[in-house]
Length: 355
Image 1 (cartoon, rainbow, N blue to C red):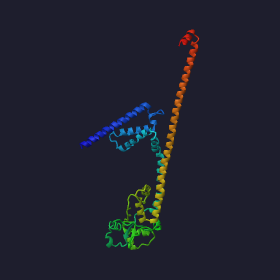
Image 2 (image 1 turned 30 degrees about the vertical axis):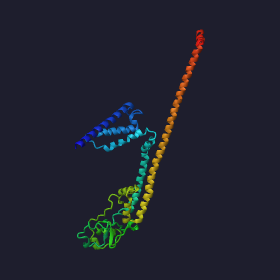
Image 3 (image 1 turned 60 degrees about the horizontal axis):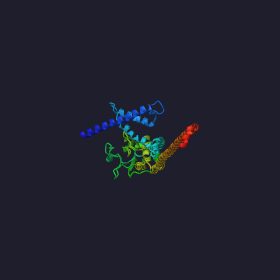
Image 4 (image 1 turned 135 degrees about the vertical axis):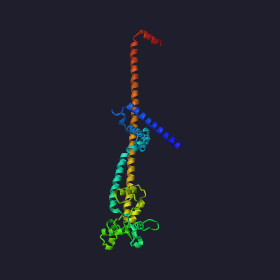
C-alpha cells in the first residue's frame, strides 16, 4: 500500500505540473496575441480554442465535488497533430484526419438511415421470428406435471442442449415463408413459454378451438426468449443494432442461422445477402472513397501552398537584387558627379596624374 500511495502522490504532482505548464503556455499566448477581439487573437484559431478548453477541463477536476473528467482529458492526445501539421509530409495526413470528420459524419448518417430503413422492413418480416420453440403436442399432466411446469416445458431440448427453433407458420409472413426448421414428429411449434397458450395462436389464425382447450389457457401467456437477448428483430431499436452488427460483419452468421431456423431459410438468406453484399460493401467503399478524396484534395492544396511559398521566396530575392542594383547605380552616379566637380580644379588633376 505504501508503494500505491507513493505512486498516486507522484501522479497527482505530475498532474499539477502538467496543468501549470499548459496554463502558463496559454497565458503567454494570450499576452502575446490578445484574447479574442482582433482577428489574430488567441481564440480566433481552432487549435488554441482546443487548448483553452483542455486547460479549463484540467482545472475543473480540482474543484470539490467535481466529476471524473479523465475521459475528456484524454482528448489532449490530439495535440501532437498541431506539431504534425508543420511537417511537409505529415501536413496532408493531419488535415485529412481533421477535415475528413465532416464527410465521414455524412457517411455515418447515411449508414444510420440505411439501418433505419432496413430495420422497418425487418420488423415487418422477422418480428418474433426467433421465439418459436418445439413442444410435445401432448399437454397432459403426465408429460409436463400438474400444475403446469413452464421451466420443464420451455422447449424440447435436443442432444446439443439447445431448444429447437421453429416457425408456427399460422398467419402473416410466417405463413407465406413457412419453409423453416420443422419440429420433430409428435411435436408442435409455439411462440409461448407455456404450450397451452398455442390456442391463442390458432384463434388469431382463424382456426376453431374446442372448449376444453380454451379452459386450459393460462391467465398469463409469455413469449419465449430470443436466443440472443441483445440482437433480434422484435423492435426497431434492436433491429437497427442487429443490422449495424451485420454491416460490420460481426457474428452475423449466428443471427442468420437463428432466423433461418425460426422464420424462413430463403427469406433470411436473401435479406442477409443484400446486407452483406450491398450494405457492407457500399458503406465501406463509400467511407474509403471519402477519405481518399479528402486526402487528394489536401495533398493538392499542400502542393500549391509549397509552390506559392517558393514563388514568394523567389520574388523576395528578386526584390533584394533590384534594391542592390538600384543602390549600386546611385553610388556610381554620386561618384561620377563628385569626380566631374573635382576635376575642374588643377590641384586635383595633378594629384590624379601622380597616382
